[in-house]
Amino acid sequence: MLAKDSKIALFMTGALDKPYGKMGFGMLRYSQQEIICAIDPDYAGKTTEEVTKIPRHCPVVATVDEAAALGADVLVVGIAPPGGQIPPEYVAEIDRAWNLGLSIVNGLHQVLGPTYNAPKRDGQYVWDVRVEPPGLTTSTGAASTLKAKRVLTVGSDMAVGKMTSGLELQKAALKMGLNCAFVATGQIGICITGSGVPLDGIRVDFACGAIERECLKYADADLIVIEGQGSLVHPSSTSPLPLLRGSMPTHLLFCHRAGQEGLLRFPEIRIPPIKQLTALFEDLGSCCGTYSRPRTAGVALNCGHLSEEEGVEAVARFATETGFLTLDPVRMDMSPMVKRIMGGV
Image 1 (cartoon, rainbow, N blue to C red):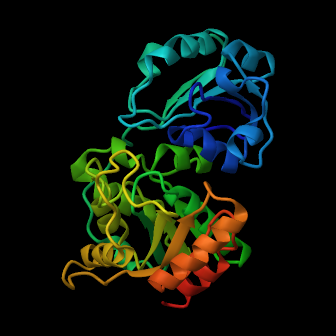
Image 2 (cartoon, helix red, strand yellow):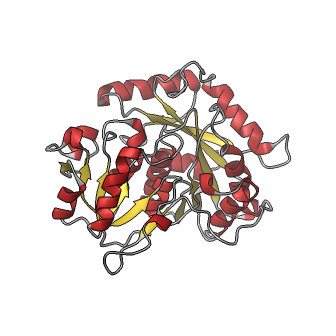
Image 3 (tube, rainbow, N blue to C red):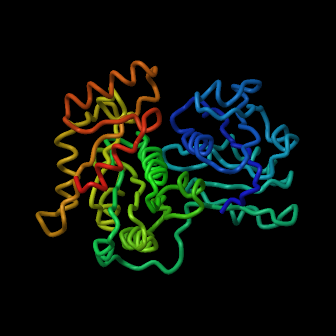
């Protein structure tokens, strides 16, 4: 877990303008720790706000040495590429960061802890986020007994904004005075919130149980927002079912990128009509009436690639076409979605 006074350098070489830089983007948007800089030689001399359009002003530097000179004490590997492996060109710079005394936060599948077993300074550490927590068991359906509304973010593809939509929904709920918990299920959300389940690092037999255990921690909440992962459409995704079974959601928040018709990695795989896809998620949640059927509260439409005016038009058009309450979770107030969920829709 990151300390509150951590001074972070985001290692983003080659990724500051790429979708797989989403670990760094999430930290820029939501981290409460101080971000000293981002590292990407392609954009050295610019700011993160200039490159990413995320409203957080941090300098971009070319090397780990420059980051350390600015006062960074933690290097966060800011990418989440397909396969979750550390690019070979990152290794020397991570080594350099460790030798300079920086701690390392690694959200990739490749574990770094055993490599760096002799700290260069007191308190230096490696946090491998995607490591299975101890003491997991199988699930029992116990989340269905919670009094809290439980909303799971689901989507048409990977990396369409399920974490962002969930955090924005929680932010709106908290502003409304609700006791709202966020269950992080990926490395980015865990780094931001300091707790959660690294779902894709957990053995399949315990995946449902891990989600259930995390939800049960918030028995006193009014609303629990569970961060979704992957998509039923995606050939590489296995996570939607344990998320459904572990959290037993009362509601779904569907996430989609405006204008996207095929999967980003596999454009030949077309995204089915949204009404059919949301019905499929609901059907799986219910399992022929075995469990209570979750309801799709609405759609969080990712418009980050559009201008503000284009985004407003896209939201209105999508709402008309689908009949769903549709909001851009970053640019629009999410309280109408919270009201819809808490109102029992």
